[in-house]
Length: 369
Image (tube, rainbow, N blue to C red):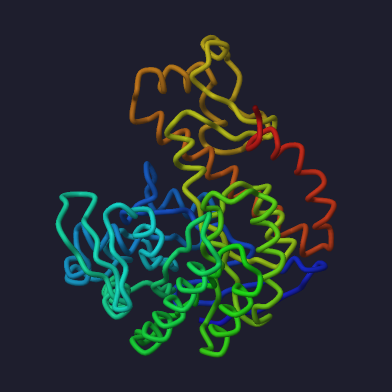
């Protein structure tokens, strides 16, 4: 993997991540394919929407169908019929979310499966083995996601564990697979700095900010992102994990972040919440029952070109599978188009103007009510 920084607009960066399976233009949004699929979509449709990289989930694929199964059938790319780059997360966040079912030690994490209650033990070495079997282009180190709130004492202990696990992941690094370190440290600036410095010394292929958007106030998240991002190497990709609110994306891009992922567009689509150029729409509302107009007059996606709001409401209220597909196509198009225009704005030196123009639209989509 190679990263090329093309240009900057203040701190906002336009770049390219080159992998053997294709180029990722940054800032980039990675649609989430937790179980080796972006829910309701097929790989060809993802390409048509402009997706250049997908994210899959180490934890979930380890539990079902198992990384050995995926390896035996030719790896994750062949398994899910996606020939572009794939990034796999390490499972650290999923283990974090299972707090009542897990126990952390220096060696790794013991946890019970959310599927059947079976007992498992994840170590940094096993996480690297799993990601190697999956054949991801970019792997993430195994980390402990620091919760919020957390005392400084806990955040420091968590940071030290994350650093040690990162070393072990690096020692077990798979050939022909890029590996990203994950900066932890909670909401403590000195700990974020310590974590960044320790990881940079190990010389990872890229760096991620973890342990954010876990319940802390937005202002505090922004403070951590703006403080930590400039500490990271200029010549490596910078990834803010699990962030999908596009107002947050603009803030992070202004700090120099290159990569994002979130289930927000797909999960909201399945729940009937759709993002448009005029603001967020809940398609189940009565007002759309006889509405012959397109979902978003300014959108060129398949859904908006072919179907009325009345039909989309009917599909949703009838719980038809087509509802999930059409809604997901639209929300992902909204995201991919936003990132395309974001890259154009940085390229032409108009990032701040773009941010100013988009802020009211995004407030209506993400902060309405």
